[in-house]
Length: 247
Image (cartoon, rainbow, N blue to C red; front, side, top):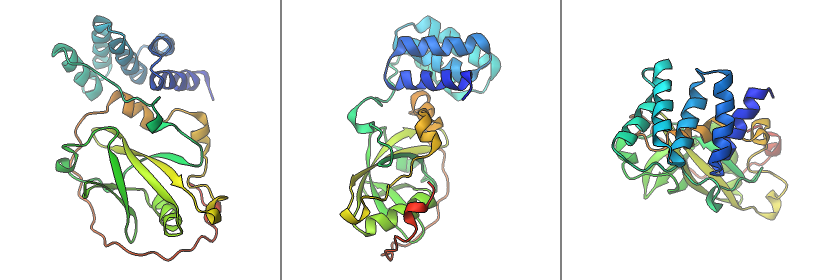
C-alpha cells in the first residue's frame, strides 16, 4: 500500500471515529501533495464543517468546484452552508456498525427501487431480507429497496435455509447508490466453521469506497432505476463447497 492510500485510509477511519483533528491532518497532507485531489478536498471540507470552521469549509468546497464544476458533494455542502443547515455524518463508531470480519459485511445494493421507496429512508434504517429465486430482496416495511449482489445472495440463501439469521441496516444513500450493513446474528452449530462473509484483502485494509460515500454523500436522493420482478422461493439447502466461495 502506497503512502497516499495509507493517508486516505487514515483520513476515512478518523472521520468514522469522529476524530476530526486527525481527519483534517491527513486530508491536508493529501491536499498538500495534490491540490486537485477532489476526494481529499471534500473530506477536508466535511471535517471543517464538523469543527465549526464554516469559512474554511466554504473555501475548501469552492476549490473542489474549481477542479470539477459539477461535483454534487461540494455543491450540496455549499448550499447547506448558505442555508445554515446542520451537517451530521453517520455514527460509524456506534454499536450498530461495529465490524467483525467474517460476521459483517457492507455491500452496495443492486436492482434499486425508485425514488418513492427512498422518501422515508435514512442511514440506520433496519431492513428485512427476503430470499427470492435469484437474489435476496431488501425491504423496509414491506417496501422493496433493492437486492443483495448475486454472490452474496447465493451464499446467504443457503445459510439462511440451514438456520442462520441476519440483520440488515441502511449504511449509506447516495446519488446513484445505496449500501447496507449485514450482520450475522446467529449461526447454527453445523455452520460455525463457515464464515458468512469470507474476509477479503480489502476488508483487512480498512477503509472502503462505500465508507467514503457514506461520510460525504449520505442524504442525496436516489435516481429511479427499473427493477426486475422475481418470485419468492424455498431454495434447496446445499452447503457443498460453500466455504470455498469467494465474496
